[in-house]
Image (cartoon, rainbow, N blue to C red):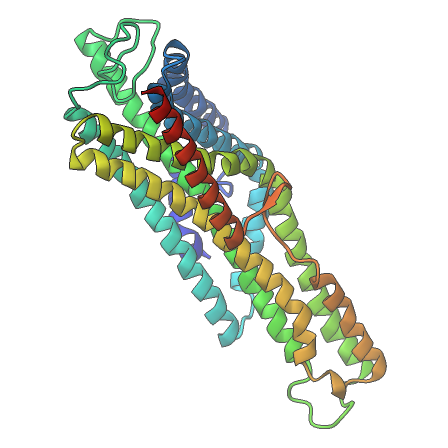
Length: 395
């Protein structure tokens, strides 16, 4: 269990919202402080800037991609904090699964999926500070053409073009504001990625348990020599254990779906918008000025980061659908012809239930799958083409 959740646990402990931790009054205050801090240092100053520059399409689009990401990150933080009891119960069930008397085959499946979850989480943890660092380096060597230079009320020499109610030009205020924006940006990018990879670790664990259930159902008759040698009572005992385990996994998957589908809806909507806005900002920057390689690298890294997390959800959604549906065919692969007619008919129960696949969705509106990933990419390219057409028409 520790092997599977190590990187996710580390990130969530840093952010102060690891569900399995003891929540004291100090921890609760820390969580509230984090949300207020990101709002004041990152989100609200950007929102104020967008209001001030309203009408300047290029400047608004350039800033909206970060602003939307920040809002989604805050929503993710609040959701994990509010549903910590639900997540704690899921973590405890996962821990019990790892401590159970598993066969070598079971452990192989669990470790394989746990390794994938670790890799996904590790890449996300590395990627978040990398993008923040690239952004800082990009602003240390700004282009001559500053989008917000003509707006006197916007502090365009900070990490983010921001509107504050106080003067940020004084040395110590300027340095303190820069430092706060770095912390807020790093925290927002960390929770943005950690939320996704933590859900991925849980879903991959459910997939491995579904694969184990499928194997047990398929091998229900193994080791028995004669036809109908599996007595009715013994069959009922083994089969009821499989049914109970299947229902537990269905309940766990439904809990994940019902808890997080609402926060995944704005994220689902924002994915193509963020990708489109960043692509537009990069193309506009390259068209107006001789964009530096650092700036192009930053835009490409940000788009890759967005696509990476979209792919995570779509891939684990595809895995969950396929694993849950495959149980419906596992009883065909079993030695059902060696059972009594009554026992053979009992196998149809789990087959019928598995025909309704488990899934994770965005607000019950769209199920995450690889088909959805391709559709969102097409949608993003369509938005980008539209924005470029509007820009060319206004020239």
